[in-house]
Length: 467
Image 1: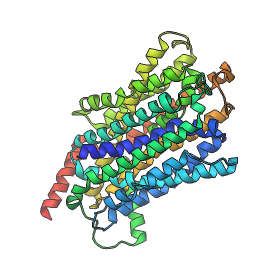
Image 2: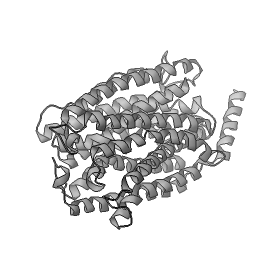
Image 3: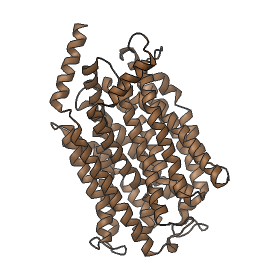
Image 4: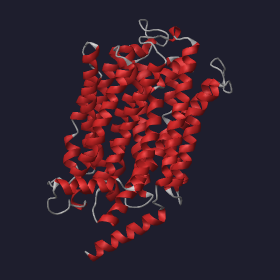
Protein backbone atom coordinates (compact mmCIF):
# COMPACT_ATOMS: atom_id res chain seq x y z
CA UNK A 1 0.00 0.00 0.00
CA UNK A 2 2.87 2.39 0.72
CA UNK A 3 4.22 1.90 -2.80
CA UNK A 4 0.74 2.59 -4.21
CA UNK A 5 0.42 5.71 -2.04
CA UNK A 6 3.78 7.13 -3.10
CA UNK A 7 3.10 6.25 -6.72
CA UNK A 8 -0.28 8.04 -6.54
CA UNK A 9 1.24 11.10 -4.88
CA UNK A 10 4.05 11.19 -7.42
CA UNK A 11 1.57 10.79 -10.25
CA UNK A 12 -0.41 13.81 -9.05
CA UNK A 13 2.76 15.86 -8.87
CA UNK A 14 3.88 14.62 -12.29
CA UNK A 15 0.58 15.45 -13.95
CA UNK A 16 0.71 19.01 -12.61
CA UNK A 17 4.42 19.51 -13.22
CA UNK A 18 4.54 18.03 -16.73
CA UNK A 19 1.33 19.71 -17.78
CA UNK A 20 2.63 23.11 -16.74
CA UNK A 21 6.22 22.54 -17.85
CA UNK A 22 5.44 21.14 -21.29
CA UNK A 23 2.51 23.27 -22.31
CA UNK A 24 1.78 26.31 -20.12
CA UNK A 25 4.34 28.64 -21.70
CA UNK A 26 3.41 27.81 -25.30
CA UNK A 27 -0.30 27.85 -24.43
CA UNK A 28 -0.30 31.31 -22.90
CA UNK A 29 2.23 32.85 -25.30
CA UNK A 30 1.26 31.27 -28.64
CA UNK A 31 -2.45 30.44 -28.13
CA UNK A 32 -3.68 33.03 -25.63
CA UNK A 33 -1.26 35.68 -26.86
CA UNK A 34 0.37 36.67 -23.55
CA UNK A 35 3.90 38.03 -23.77
CA UNK A 36 6.34 35.14 -22.99
CA UNK A 37 8.21 37.22 -20.41
CA UNK A 38 4.94 37.94 -18.59
CA UNK A 39 4.01 34.26 -18.64
CA UNK A 40 7.37 33.33 -17.17
CA UNK A 41 7.11 36.10 -14.59
CA UNK A 42 3.77 34.74 -13.36
CA UNK A 43 5.45 31.42 -12.59
CA UNK A 44 8.36 33.20 -10.93
CA UNK A 45 5.92 35.12 -8.72
CA UNK A 46 4.40 31.82 -7.62
CA UNK A 47 7.91 30.56 -6.86
CA UNK A 48 8.51 33.51 -4.53
CA UNK A 49 5.29 32.66 -2.68
CA UNK A 50 6.42 29.03 -2.48
CA UNK A 51 9.70 30.06 -0.84
CA UNK A 52 7.65 31.37 2.09
CA UNK A 53 4.67 29.03 2.13
CA UNK A 54 6.48 25.69 1.87
CA UNK A 55 8.51 25.96 5.10
CA UNK A 56 5.53 27.49 6.91
CA UNK A 57 3.29 24.56 5.95
CA UNK A 58 6.10 22.16 6.82
CA UNK A 59 6.51 23.63 10.28
CA UNK A 60 2.73 23.76 10.76
CA UNK A 61 2.39 20.07 9.90
CA UNK A 62 5.22 19.21 12.32
CA UNK A 63 3.29 20.70 15.24
CA UNK A 64 -0.36 20.14 14.32
CA UNK A 65 -2.51 18.22 16.80
CA UNK A 66 -5.63 16.44 15.50
CA UNK A 67 -7.45 13.10 15.52
CA UNK A 68 -5.97 12.49 12.08
CA UNK A 69 -2.41 13.10 13.22
CA UNK A 70 -0.01 15.75 11.99
CA UNK A 71 -0.10 15.12 8.22
CA UNK A 72 -3.46 13.76 7.09
CA UNK A 73 -5.65 16.83 7.72
CA UNK A 74 -3.56 18.53 5.03
CA UNK A 75 -3.65 15.52 2.71
CA UNK A 76 -7.45 15.27 2.80
CA UNK A 77 -7.88 19.03 2.62
CA UNK A 78 -5.91 19.27 -0.65
CA UNK A 79 -7.96 16.69 -2.57
CA UNK A 80 -10.37 19.19 -4.18
CA UNK A 81 -8.52 22.56 -4.39
CA UNK A 82 -5.67 21.17 -6.52
CA UNK A 83 -7.81 19.82 -9.41
CA UNK A 84 -10.11 22.88 -9.37
CA UNK A 85 -7.20 25.34 -9.63
CA UNK A 86 -5.49 23.20 -12.26
CA UNK A 87 -8.54 23.19 -14.52
CA UNK A 88 -9.13 26.94 -14.20
CA UNK A 89 -5.51 27.54 -15.19
CA UNK A 90 -6.34 26.08 -18.63
CA UNK A 91 -9.69 27.81 -19.04
CA UNK A 92 -9.01 31.55 -18.95
CA UNK A 93 -11.65 33.89 -20.38
CA UNK A 94 -10.75 36.29 -23.19
CA UNK A 95 -8.99 39.13 -21.38
CA UNK A 96 -6.53 41.92 -22.03
CA UNK A 97 -2.80 41.37 -21.41
CA UNK A 98 -2.79 42.64 -17.83
CA UNK A 99 -5.93 40.75 -16.84
CA UNK A 100 -4.63 37.55 -18.48
CA UNK A 101 -1.38 37.90 -16.54
CA UNK A 102 -3.34 38.34 -13.30
CA UNK A 103 -5.48 35.26 -14.09
CA UNK A 104 -2.37 33.18 -14.78
CA UNK A 105 -0.52 34.48 -11.72
CA UNK A 106 -3.53 34.16 -9.41
CA UNK A 107 -4.44 30.58 -10.25
CA UNK A 108 -0.80 29.52 -10.43
CA UNK A 109 -0.24 30.82 -6.90
CA UNK A 110 -3.47 29.16 -5.71
CA UNK A 111 -2.46 25.87 -7.34
CA UNK A 112 0.99 26.03 -5.78
CA UNK A 113 -0.41 26.71 -2.32
CA UNK A 114 -2.86 23.82 -2.62
CA UNK A 115 -0.10 21.55 -3.91
CA UNK A 116 2.06 22.54 -0.94
CA UNK A 117 -0.71 21.33 1.38
CA UNK A 118 -0.27 17.88 -0.12
CA UNK A 119 3.37 17.46 -1.07
CA UNK A 120 5.01 18.84 2.06
CA UNK A 121 3.06 16.73 4.62
CA UNK A 122 3.13 13.67 2.36
CA UNK A 123 6.89 13.79 1.80
CA UNK A 124 7.28 14.26 5.56
CA UNK A 125 5.96 10.71 5.99
CA UNK A 126 9.01 9.25 4.21
CA UNK A 127 11.56 9.24 7.08
CA UNK A 128 9.12 7.41 9.35
CA UNK A 129 7.74 4.95 6.81
CA UNK A 130 11.17 4.08 5.37
CA UNK A 131 13.99 4.60 7.91
CA UNK A 132 16.60 2.53 6.01
CA UNK A 133 19.33 4.22 3.93
CA UNK A 134 18.25 2.46 0.73
CA UNK A 135 14.59 1.79 1.68
CA UNK A 136 13.64 5.45 1.30
CA UNK A 137 15.42 5.62 -2.04
CA UNK A 138 13.35 2.70 -3.33
CA UNK A 139 10.10 4.25 -2.10
CA UNK A 140 10.86 7.62 -3.67
CA UNK A 141 11.83 5.84 -6.88
CA UNK A 142 8.21 4.69 -7.19
CA UNK A 143 7.01 8.23 -6.53
CA UNK A 144 9.13 9.91 -9.19
CA UNK A 145 8.75 7.03 -11.65
CA UNK A 146 4.96 7.21 -11.31
CA UNK A 147 5.05 10.97 -11.76
CA UNK A 148 7.10 10.82 -14.93
CA UNK A 149 5.30 7.81 -16.41
CA UNK A 150 1.79 9.19 -16.08
CA UNK A 151 2.92 12.77 -16.68
CA UNK A 152 4.58 11.64 -19.92
CA UNK A 153 1.51 9.58 -20.82
CA UNK A 154 -0.60 12.71 -20.53
CA UNK A 155 1.89 14.66 -22.67
CA UNK A 156 1.78 11.95 -25.33
CA UNK A 157 -2.01 12.05 -25.23
CA UNK A 158 -1.84 15.79 -25.76
CA UNK A 159 0.10 15.42 -29.01
CA UNK A 160 -1.72 12.31 -30.24
CA UNK A 161 -5.26 13.38 -29.36
CA UNK A 162 -5.92 16.86 -28.00
CA UNK A 163 -3.25 18.73 -30.01
CA UNK A 164 -3.16 16.50 -33.09
CA UNK A 165 -3.19 18.20 -36.50
CA UNK A 166 -6.59 18.79 -38.08
CA UNK A 167 -7.72 20.34 -41.38
CA UNK A 168 -8.03 23.65 -39.53
CA UNK A 169 -4.61 23.20 -37.87
CA UNK A 170 -2.34 21.37 -40.36
CA UNK A 171 1.42 20.80 -40.54
CA UNK A 172 2.24 20.85 -36.83
CA UNK A 173 -0.19 23.68 -35.98
CA UNK A 174 -2.26 21.39 -33.76
CA UNK A 175 -0.19 22.72 -30.86
CA UNK A 176 -2.26 25.93 -31.21
CA UNK A 177 -5.69 24.30 -30.62
CA UNK A 178 -7.15 26.09 -27.60
CA UNK A 179 -10.02 23.64 -27.10
CA UNK A 180 -7.53 20.79 -26.82
CA UNK A 181 -5.84 22.40 -23.83
CA UNK A 182 -9.15 23.02 -22.08
CA UNK A 183 -10.38 19.45 -22.55
CA UNK A 184 -7.07 18.00 -21.41
CA UNK A 185 -7.17 20.24 -18.34
CA UNK A 186 -10.54 18.83 -17.34
CA UNK A 187 -9.47 15.19 -17.77
CA UNK A 188 -6.25 15.81 -15.84
CA UNK A 189 -8.18 17.51 -13.03
CA UNK A 190 -10.32 14.39 -12.60
CA UNK A 191 -7.22 12.18 -12.52
CA UNK A 192 -5.64 14.47 -9.92
CA UNK A 193 -8.64 14.11 -7.63
CA UNK A 194 -8.41 10.31 -7.73
CA UNK A 195 -4.64 10.22 -7.13
CA UNK A 196 -4.74 12.64 -4.20
CA UNK A 197 -7.57 10.74 -2.53
CA UNK A 198 -5.72 7.43 -2.96
CA UNK A 199 -2.47 8.80 -1.52
CA UNK A 200 -4.26 10.06 1.59
CA UNK A 201 -6.39 6.96 2.10
CA UNK A 202 -3.57 4.45 1.51
CA UNK A 203 -1.41 5.98 4.27
CA UNK A 204 -4.29 6.53 6.71
CA UNK A 205 -3.53 3.24 8.51
CA UNK A 206 -0.16 4.60 9.70
CA UNK A 207 -1.69 7.46 11.71
CA UNK A 208 -1.63 5.63 15.10
CA UNK A 209 2.07 4.75 14.76
CA UNK A 210 3.41 8.07 13.49
CA UNK A 211 5.35 10.33 15.83
CA UNK A 212 3.21 12.84 17.74
CA UNK A 213 3.90 16.59 17.67
CA UNK A 214 6.25 17.98 20.32
CA UNK A 215 4.56 18.72 23.68
CA UNK A 216 3.50 22.21 24.60
CA UNK A 217 3.19 25.35 22.57
CA UNK A 218 6.21 27.28 21.35
CA UNK A 219 6.41 31.03 20.95
CA UNK A 220 6.58 32.48 17.46
CA UNK A 221 10.10 33.73 18.17
CA UNK A 222 11.26 30.26 19.23
CA UNK A 223 9.62 28.59 16.23
CA UNK A 224 11.25 31.08 13.88
CA UNK A 225 14.65 30.60 15.51
CA UNK A 226 14.45 26.80 15.34
CA UNK A 227 13.27 26.90 11.73
CA UNK A 228 16.05 29.23 10.62
CA UNK A 229 18.63 27.09 12.40
CA UNK A 230 17.44 24.00 10.54
CA UNK A 231 17.25 25.73 7.17
CA UNK A 232 20.84 26.98 7.66
CA UNK A 233 22.13 23.43 8.05
CA UNK A 234 25.09 23.05 5.66
CA UNK A 235 24.07 19.73 4.17
CA UNK A 236 20.48 20.87 3.76
CA UNK A 237 21.58 24.09 2.07
CA UNK A 238 23.82 22.09 -0.28
CA UNK A 239 21.13 19.64 -1.35
CA UNK A 240 18.54 22.43 -1.67
CA UNK A 241 20.86 24.38 -3.97
CA UNK A 242 21.81 21.33 -6.00
CA UNK A 243 18.32 19.92 -6.43
CA UNK A 244 16.87 23.37 -7.18
CA UNK A 245 19.44 24.01 -9.91
CA UNK A 246 18.98 20.53 -11.34
CA UNK A 247 15.22 21.01 -11.24
CA UNK A 248 15.60 24.37 -12.98
CA UNK A 249 17.64 22.72 -15.73
CA UNK A 250 15.06 19.99 -16.18
CA UNK A 251 12.24 22.53 -16.04
CA UNK A 252 13.90 24.70 -18.68
CA UNK A 253 14.35 21.69 -20.96
CA UNK A 254 10.73 20.68 -20.47
CA UNK A 255 9.37 24.22 -20.94
CA UNK A 256 11.35 24.60 -24.18
CA UNK A 257 10.40 21.14 -25.46
CA UNK A 258 7.47 22.37 -27.55
CA UNK A 259 9.78 24.96 -29.14
CA UNK A 260 12.91 22.86 -29.66
CA UNK A 261 11.19 19.87 -31.30
CA UNK A 262 9.55 21.62 -34.30
CA UNK A 263 11.87 24.59 -34.74
CA UNK A 264 15.35 23.41 -33.72
CA UNK A 265 15.16 19.68 -34.53
CA UNK A 266 12.58 19.97 -37.33
CA UNK A 267 10.21 17.27 -36.03
CA UNK A 268 6.52 17.24 -36.88
CA UNK A 269 3.79 16.47 -34.33
CA UNK A 270 3.83 12.73 -35.15
CA UNK A 271 7.57 12.47 -34.55
CA UNK A 272 7.31 14.55 -31.38
CA UNK A 273 4.58 12.33 -29.98
CA UNK A 274 6.65 9.26 -30.88
CA UNK A 275 9.63 10.61 -28.92
CA UNK A 276 7.38 11.26 -25.94
CA UNK A 277 5.78 7.81 -26.24
CA UNK A 278 9.22 6.20 -26.12
CA UNK A 279 9.89 8.08 -22.88
CA UNK A 280 7.19 6.03 -21.19
CA UNK A 281 9.97 3.46 -20.84
CA UNK A 282 12.18 5.93 -18.93
CA UNK A 283 10.56 5.62 -15.46
CA UNK A 284 10.57 1.83 -15.76
CA UNK A 285 14.25 2.00 -16.73
CA UNK A 286 14.94 4.18 -13.68
CA UNK A 287 13.14 1.75 -11.35
CA UNK A 288 15.31 -1.08 -12.67
CA UNK A 289 18.67 0.72 -12.82
CA UNK A 290 18.73 2.92 -9.73
CA UNK A 291 18.85 0.12 -7.11
CA UNK A 292 21.90 -1.38 -8.83
CA UNK A 293 23.52 2.04 -9.32
CA UNK A 294 23.09 3.04 -5.67
CA UNK A 295 23.56 -0.26 -3.84
CA UNK A 296 26.43 -0.03 -1.37
CA UNK A 297 27.40 3.49 -2.47
CA UNK A 298 27.09 6.90 -0.83
CA UNK A 299 24.18 8.87 -2.28
CA UNK A 300 26.35 11.93 -2.83
CA UNK A 301 28.64 10.04 -5.17
CA UNK A 302 25.69 8.51 -7.02
CA UNK A 303 24.02 11.91 -7.46
CA UNK A 304 27.20 13.55 -8.79
CA UNK A 305 27.65 10.80 -11.38
CA UNK A 306 24.03 10.97 -12.48
CA UNK A 307 24.20 14.77 -12.70
CA UNK A 308 27.28 14.62 -14.94
CA UNK A 309 25.44 12.24 -17.26
CA UNK A 310 22.42 14.59 -17.22
CA UNK A 311 24.67 17.47 -18.26
CA UNK A 312 26.09 15.53 -21.20
CA UNK A 313 22.73 14.19 -22.38
CA UNK A 314 20.76 17.40 -21.78
CA UNK A 315 22.91 20.09 -23.38
CA UNK A 316 25.40 18.02 -25.39
CA UNK A 317 23.24 17.28 -28.47
CA UNK A 318 22.22 20.94 -28.89
CA UNK A 319 25.77 22.26 -28.65
CA UNK A 320 27.11 19.52 -30.94
CA UNK A 321 24.39 20.27 -33.49
CA UNK A 322 25.34 23.94 -33.52
CA UNK A 323 28.99 22.98 -34.04
CA UNK A 324 28.07 20.70 -36.93
CA UNK A 325 29.13 17.57 -35.05
CA UNK A 326 25.65 16.03 -34.78
CA UNK A 327 23.30 14.56 -37.42
CA UNK A 328 21.64 17.35 -39.40
CA UNK A 329 17.91 18.01 -39.37
CA UNK A 330 17.34 16.05 -42.59
CA UNK A 331 19.65 13.13 -41.62
CA UNK A 332 17.96 9.74 -41.28
CA UNK A 333 19.80 9.00 -38.02
CA UNK A 334 18.56 12.09 -36.17
CA UNK A 335 15.07 10.88 -35.26
CA UNK A 336 16.03 7.45 -33.81
CA UNK A 337 19.02 9.01 -32.05
CA UNK A 338 16.81 11.63 -30.38
CA UNK A 339 14.41 8.89 -29.28
CA UNK A 340 17.25 7.14 -27.43
CA UNK A 341 18.56 10.40 -25.98
CA UNK A 342 15.08 11.35 -24.79
CA UNK A 343 14.58 8.03 -23.01
CA UNK A 344 17.97 8.31 -21.27
CA UNK A 345 17.42 11.97 -20.35
CA UNK A 346 14.08 11.36 -18.60
CA UNK A 347 15.45 8.25 -16.84
CA UNK A 348 18.27 10.40 -15.47
CA UNK A 349 15.79 13.06 -14.30
CA UNK A 350 13.84 10.40 -12.40
CA UNK A 351 16.98 8.97 -10.81
CA UNK A 352 18.54 12.29 -9.81
CA UNK A 353 15.23 13.46 -8.32
CA UNK A 354 14.88 10.22 -6.37
CA UNK A 355 18.39 10.30 -4.92
CA UNK A 356 18.06 13.98 -4.01
CA UNK A 357 14.78 13.35 -2.19
CA UNK A 358 16.33 10.44 -0.31
CA UNK A 359 19.27 12.62 0.75
CA UNK A 360 16.85 15.21 2.12
CA UNK A 361 15.14 12.50 4.19
CA UNK A 362 18.52 11.53 5.68
CA UNK A 363 18.92 15.10 6.93
CA UNK A 364 15.75 14.67 9.05
CA UNK A 365 17.51 12.02 11.12
CA UNK A 366 20.71 14.05 11.35
CA UNK A 367 18.78 17.07 12.64
CA UNK A 368 16.90 14.90 15.13
CA UNK A 369 20.24 13.75 16.57
CA UNK A 370 21.61 17.29 16.67
CA UNK A 371 18.56 19.02 18.14
CA UNK A 372 16.27 16.33 19.56
CA UNK A 373 13.44 17.60 17.31
CA UNK A 374 11.59 15.69 14.59
CA UNK A 375 11.20 18.21 11.77
CA UNK A 376 10.15 16.05 8.85
CA UNK A 377 7.70 18.65 7.55
CA UNK A 378 10.11 21.57 7.66
CA UNK A 379 13.00 19.65 6.09
CA UNK A 380 10.80 17.93 3.53
CA UNK A 381 9.37 21.27 2.45
CA UNK A 382 12.49 21.65 0.32
CA UNK A 383 11.28 18.74 -1.83
CA UNK A 384 8.05 20.58 -2.54
CA UNK A 385 9.92 23.81 -3.20
CA UNK A 386 12.57 22.35 -5.53
CA UNK A 387 9.89 20.46 -7.43
CA UNK A 388 8.15 23.75 -8.10
CA UNK A 389 11.47 25.30 -9.10
CA UNK A 390 11.45 22.89 -12.03
CA UNK A 391 8.31 24.47 -13.43
CA UNK A 392 8.47 28.01 -12.08
CA UNK A 393 12.10 28.91 -12.70
CA UNK A 394 12.26 26.70 -15.79
CA UNK A 395 9.35 28.48 -17.47
CA UNK A 396 10.72 31.86 -16.38
CA UNK A 397 14.09 31.06 -17.97
CA UNK A 398 12.32 29.76 -21.07
CA UNK A 399 10.33 32.98 -21.35
CA UNK A 400 13.51 35.05 -21.04
CA UNK A 401 15.22 33.01 -23.76
CA UNK A 402 12.31 33.52 -26.15
CA UNK A 403 12.13 37.24 -25.37
CA UNK A 404 15.90 37.59 -25.80
CA UNK A 405 15.71 36.37 -29.40
CA UNK A 406 12.43 38.20 -30.16
CA UNK A 407 10.63 34.93 -30.83
CA UNK A 408 7.27 35.84 -32.40
CA UNK A 409 3.90 34.87 -30.96
CA UNK A 410 1.37 32.99 -33.11
CA UNK A 411 4.30 31.57 -35.09
CA UNK A 412 4.28 28.54 -37.37
CA UNK A 413 7.31 26.51 -38.40
CA UNK A 414 7.75 28.26 -41.75
CA UNK A 415 7.78 31.73 -40.15
CA UNK A 416 11.00 31.12 -38.19
CA UNK A 417 14.30 31.62 -40.03
CA UNK A 418 17.47 29.62 -39.40
CA UNK A 419 19.27 32.49 -37.73
CA UNK A 420 16.61 32.68 -35.00
CA UNK A 421 16.73 28.90 -34.55
CA UNK A 422 20.51 29.04 -34.10
CA UNK A 423 20.25 31.86 -31.57
CA UNK A 424 17.69 29.82 -29.64
CA UNK A 425 20.12 26.89 -29.52
CA UNK A 426 23.11 28.99 -28.50
CA UNK A 427 21.16 30.35 -25.55
CA UNK A 428 19.42 27.09 -24.58
CA UNK A 429 22.45 24.73 -24.63
CA UNK A 430 24.91 26.81 -22.55
CA UNK A 431 22.23 27.90 -20.04
CA UNK A 432 21.33 24.26 -19.44
CA UNK A 433 24.99 23.32 -19.05
CA UNK A 434 25.60 26.16 -16.57
CA UNK A 435 22.69 25.05 -14.37
CA UNK A 436 23.94 21.45 -14.24
CA UNK A 437 27.56 22.41 -13.52
CA UNK A 438 26.50 24.72 -10.68
CA UNK A 439 24.26 21.99 -9.24
CA UNK A 440 27.17 19.52 -9.22
CA UNK A 441 29.47 22.05 -7.54
CA UNK A 442 26.95 22.67 -4.73
CA UNK A 443 27.09 18.99 -3.71
CA UNK A 444 30.64 19.36 -2.40
CA UNK A 445 29.14 20.87 0.78
CA UNK A 446 26.86 17.89 1.52
CA UNK A 447 28.42 15.99 4.45
CA UNK A 448 26.17 13.01 5.23
CA UNK A 449 27.46 9.56 4.28
CA UNK A 450 26.04 6.06 4.53
CA UNK A 451 28.17 5.39 7.64
CA UNK A 452 27.07 8.62 9.31
CA UNK A 453 23.41 7.84 8.61
CA UNK A 454 23.72 4.42 10.27
CA UNK A 455 25.26 6.11 13.31
CA UNK A 456 22.36 8.57 13.43
CA UNK A 457 19.78 5.78 13.31
CA UNK A 458 21.59 3.91 16.10
CA UNK A 459 21.68 7.03 18.28
CA UNK A 460 17.98 7.70 17.67
CA UNK A 461 17.11 4.09 18.46
CA UNK A 462 19.17 4.29 21.67
CA UNK A 463 17.38 7.45 22.72
CA UNK A 464 13.98 5.84 22.14
CA UNK A 465 15.01 2.76 24.16
CA UNK A 466 16.08 4.97 27.07
CA UNK A 467 12.76 6.80 26.90
